[in-house]
Length: 118
Image (cartoon, rainbow, N blue to C red):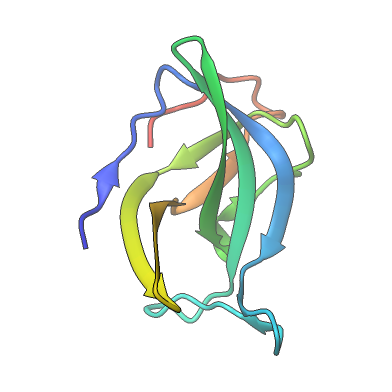
């Protein structure tokens, strides 16, 4: 599957919703894990503002990659952010979108630094 690196140098990124475990099966409550490391996967909603526009993105991050206190409004850095296009068919309905994944989400509240590149 194609992975597209996302440059965050010119963007302001902040927490829209704090990290939550990524659930793979809502009926059983099964939590997703990383296939390579076995780490629990978390989802973090971030506001990504660049070029006069802002969007809320849901980013998947392994639990060990979450550092600092991540509450709503906290400026963060996204390490190695990638976008992956996806498509599936369920009950005859085709769906498609873009998923986002990062190696780490780090709070910049303590450092006062600007968001750095992925």
